[in-house]
Each structure stands twice: as C-alpha cells, then as structure tokens.
Image (tube, rainbow, N blue to C red; front, top):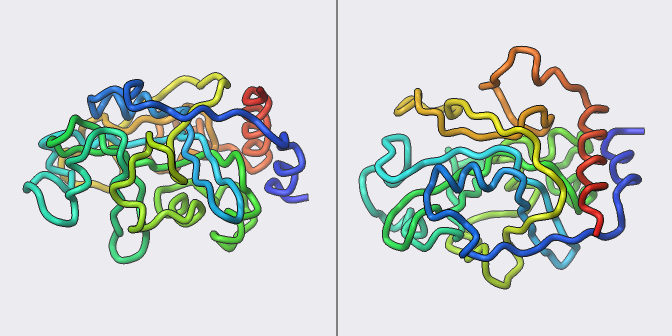
Length: 235
C-alpha cells in the first residue's frame, strides 16, 4: 500500500480546526513567520475540505531587497499593503502560483511565503490536482502546495481571518522544535536567517537544512509523522 493510501486509512473522520483571529497574529513579519509554523491553511471547496499544517515559511520584511515590495508600490503588489492576515498571491516565473500572508499593519508592505504544508484533510483531492499519489510531493514546496490547494490569482487580497473558503486556523496538537536558516533561491539579502521550519518534519522542502542527516527520511516516516499529527488533532 502506498504511503498516501495508508495515511488516508489512518485519518480520523473529523477533527477540530479553529479559525484564527487577526488579533492573534503578530503584526511583525519575522515574528509572524515563526508564529505560523504549526498553524493550518484551510481551503473549503465544493468538492471537499483541503487542510494542511504550515511547516515552513520565509519572511520578507519591510525594506527587504529580496522582496517584491522593495522598489515601492505597483498594481501587482497592492495586496501587500493590506492589513496583516490577508493573502498575497503571485505567479512565479509564469509557472506556479505562490501563497503569501501579508504581515504588517495597513500601509506597510511585507509578506510571508508559505513554503510547505503537511497534508491533513482532502488527500484524494490533492492527489487529483497534483496528478500524483506520492504523499511527500503533494504540498512540499510553495508551487506544489498552491496547486494541491487550488490557490491562484482569484485569492489575491482575500482576508484569511474572515469568514470565507480560504482561511488560517489552528489545531490542538503540539508543534515540534522550530529551526531557522537563510532563505531559498534568492541572491539579495541571502545571508539573512529569515526561513523558519519545523525540525524533523519530512514535508519541509530543501535544500537549506541545519543538519546534514536531519532530512534523510523516507516515505514511511512521512506517513508516521502525519498520523501522529492527526491523533493529536482529535477533538
């Protein structure tokens, strides 16, 4: 049996995800990037609910030369100037949409890239949208997770803390130790430690890792990690 099928068999039929309020979110980019580790992205579709734990983020604070906002406002990034907790969606290199969470008070542009999720609900739908049954390939990486969750330009500017189909939540299960490294795939401000991730979680993307052997985890470990999360998430 594939890891994905085994994980689906072990999933509880129902567990509680509480919607986050904006007042709970730090209005500081770096603090929010760390805070979001272990929180949940939910997308309620007509076909069913998709949800996944955030296990990797990257912060792009005000004035960051690596950020889209560095040269000032443009129509493409206007959602970055909304209140923290809104969605900023961009199309990367004409190939992949990417989900970001706006991270500063109204009028100050900054955002957090959601780099990886640990799938919780809606695995069959994710497999259909991603055209793969490999569990680790569903939401490991920002382009993959946007495809798996059917997130695109239509969601740019949505309030992730308001009633709606795409939102941020939390469950009651514990969060593992949080690591910090440089960001991936950038050349400006490349030495800044602005990437956060849950250490030991196999759904974290690469290649910047803190320990050489930390991520030599195969698919059966992914299944075990996910099953443990779901057990903790039971109401």
